[in-house]
Length: 349
Length: 189
Image (cartoon, rainbow over all chains, first blue to last red; front, side, top):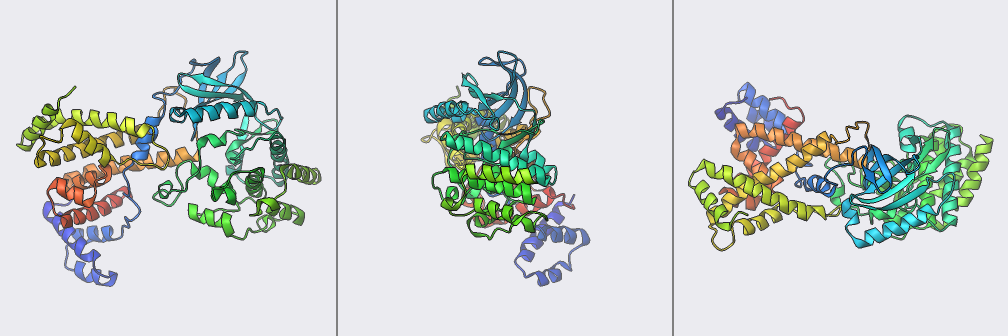
């Protein structure tokens, strides 16, 4: 490490050099000793603009909002017995648990701070009731909900399989599978819309493909519990990446939701369109480096036809996917139409 | 609990150069700040931030009392409180980063949000460690970073609390930031 005298010299030269245009810095540093010069040069190369902007309050806040301790295997929540922790997400935690009859369930526990407001609690119960009324082979069944000392919980049928997020991340999805999954997802959406229930957060993380090949959509009607979406400057991390609850959802969000309008069934269709595009083309239609890029892409970028990304996609499929992504909600097909069209495509591929 | 008088006496004693006073002061300030942070931050929505500075000010009024506190004491308090705030934030980042859970279940899948949070927590811990190195070379600069970044103080507030000029704090802050970034990027010194 540098001696005190060296450090003072480094400090003086750094401040002097940083005020100079780059070509004059060499001249200034020429007289300095080797170590001092190397140190100052390496410091001058650093661009510190993006860091140290705000105290990391949200990290501590995030932790303080969580339950003091996670649930351990064997603990009971309502009539469910915890087996293991599956994932930690924006809303809370998901556990694998056993129901009264020994059946496996996925138990979702909502964070305490969400539960703290009476409105959030009411909304949870209303939505849980609505969701449990949905019976469809392509929708993950809600089998119970309630309150315990740890918070609100929701029990769902246990599905052994992988989410579309995991499957997409593993590499290119086979075209046949992409069309088949699109048809199954559209079928689920059509059934829910017919029952008057919106999903509001269709994205690959919320779609699971079982080991038997049956696709199921998770969290129907529950997305709203996470509250309204804000695009705040501090949701953008130091590196320009998105942090916070936005990250997963932003890419699948319809332009009208972005503008703060109310979600409709057409918004769900748009999100499904983005997902179908990604599955078929192997690339996301609105990929961008920053939230603003994504926003701009969703708002106004011309969307390349999926067939330009992957050979062998019929013009008819191209056209249909782009219709789902139409910026005008009224111009999009209904979920029922998506279901019919993808089923037809599926039978042909 | 601790009386106003106790904290004021400790601040005065520390100001007079009694090193033991700081050892007694720190846990009092840490505990009070932590309690207040828990209360304030627990209800925080995504997007809101309640700055540490606000908590530190509040803690000062509570612990030292507004009436009988001298200007000197106030500066000393801010110095202690910013260190305490750093510890609070680093401790939380650390527990977040290592993220071991009671269940012993390690095959925990993380969603995007969690990955971002883990990465940030790792950065905070790395910064804290780099700051310890800087402290060995130049304690004043490390204190400036502690007050600015972890305490959330402005350049002017930092200058006031440390009894430095604004120009000096600006210069210290700039070099310290650059130096720390370099260290965290796997620097060359």
